[in-house]
Length: 144
Image (tube, rainbow, N blue to C red):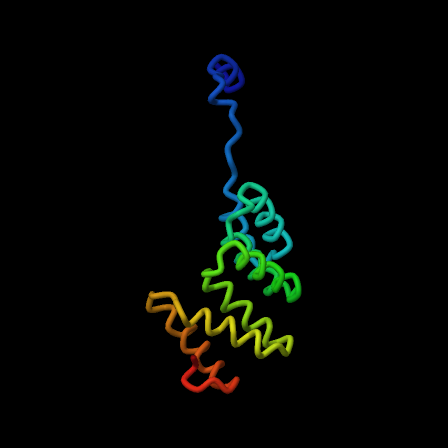
């Protein structure tokens, strides 16, 4: 029996249900390949499926940053923080975008928020040190 007939005779409703795509993983893969426009499209599809997930907005902001679309990145980080004010990665990323824009006071607020509850893994230490060093450079002794 050929493939067509096997499919025809074996079809069931559960076989016909569409598979839910993993837009986040697709977007991350596209971003790693440097295709930021396609990655942003996949992130937007992921956001459509789950509009209250701040991590998707944070990833959108990162992709916008990599695509040199700083204003869009700032807006995405801000939306993410509206949903989850304790999203430390969003505070960190937003702080450095605000610094590029010359908004050192606002940047310091976000660096302090990041340092108030930094990630705990060993890999994060370089980002913690960078945030502290930046705060000292902004005139905040001890980086706090």
